Length: 197
Image 1 (cartoon, rainbow, N blue to C red):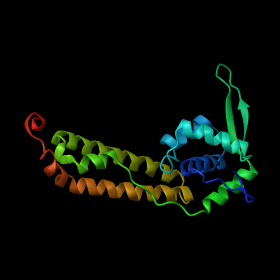
Image 2: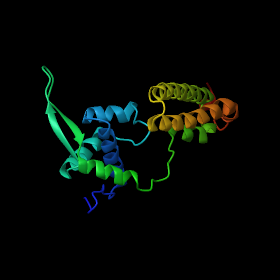
Image 3: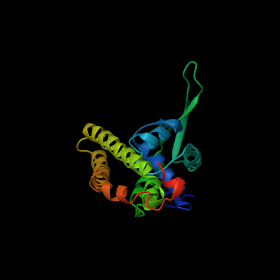
Image 4: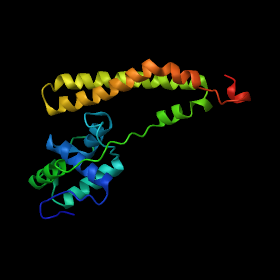
């Protein structure tokens, strides 16, 4: 629901974040719902807000109903029609208002950390595999962010990517430098068949 100053309703924080994310993507140019999802899944917006198709399309519908985005049909031979969205002037005002609101604290939720927290009950080979996999994933994220940062040097985007790199680099350094501590503990609580590898 829009107030007098055209702001995004924060009735449900996750929906508000997805709406703001959609407006931010559309501020950079037209996009279909599919393209927005790709950008938020593994593109340049993947580090900000989780946004599934099930959240993006209702958010786009609500934004369109509020006059914050518009859409046009795009047709290509041999392909189904698709809606291509663009931000309206009212949408830009709403985006600016949302960007000037206080943000929530970041929350880290990690299945990986949960496994490490209970590593005494996990097979040592599994803990080692998880550590190897996470370190490789962090290295891939660092490389991807560096490539993106190089292409956007001197922009707000490169600053955000550099911030992400600093976080991933710290995680990587901690895991590489301290993995022996967790590997020494792994499996200590296993008995009998569970302890056999």
